[in-house]
Image 1 (cartoon, rainbow, N blue to C red):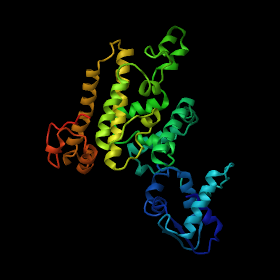
Image 2 (image 1 turned 120 degrees about the vertical axis):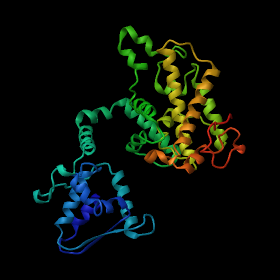
Image 3 (image 1 turned 180 degrees about the vertical axis):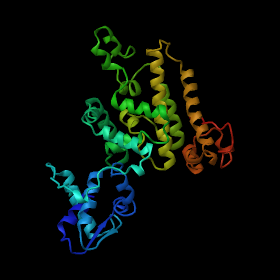
Image 4 (image 1 turned 90 degrees about the vertical axis):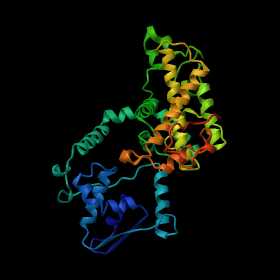
Length: 368
């Protein structure tokens, strides 16, 4: 968007200008979506100030300005050169100073009250609060930064491409995660649970920081991927069996992969979705087993109990998927084809089931 602004500033106001871009979002934003964004004061879009400044530069022009979409990486000379310049900008050691001044007559302050809804007002207030110094400081906590680095590294290793922190934060809201899983991933990223080093600050409770089974300082990464207490090894063994049945591959997730499971891509939509479900539900079950043992004072669960609880958890997700293929659920309906892709090659007695089993009750996942 700032490249469009710079083009407008570099070209004389009375000379016709054609701007080519491979960003459909920006072209639509400066044309079909512009009226709505202006009514909302550019407060609901990312880089709202940059978009507002670009719109002001476009309106300053006296000659016609044309926006043309071009396909990315199609050999368009200007587009390829723009990509190279963008890469140079990302790698630059010093930031570029950009003039964002907008004259008063071209500035539209705030959002229109006549277009305001309770939902829109809440979103704007929330976004403004997130931009305060206190919130920015909270998001830059060292623990959060370390965990985000782990998640980004895992996503890059699995997807073979870089993944922005915003993408990982947004993935926690994925529809494949229910509310408790979303909260669990968010708290784990922030190291918000009272475990491990948290108790070291209190002299009378410093022994609570130690994992009694392994005799080392506890952490979420330790609990989910390394702890020898009953639960972790058995849960991942069961998850790996089902994943092997689906793909022929083993599943040995790192803590970073668990945090990034919402953005990790597999060979198909179905595999990616099952991967998200298996990792998130299995990790959350391990955490629950740990809390029952450490906080609730219960003895460690037997392998049979752990297996029964894991199978109930995964079969419950399967049943919810099956029920949500019914169109009576409206916007919550899941595509039948996606559900079939997700659970293909994982079901018990699958060769005896109809091709479309979503209308049949009692379908269960099979054993590895």
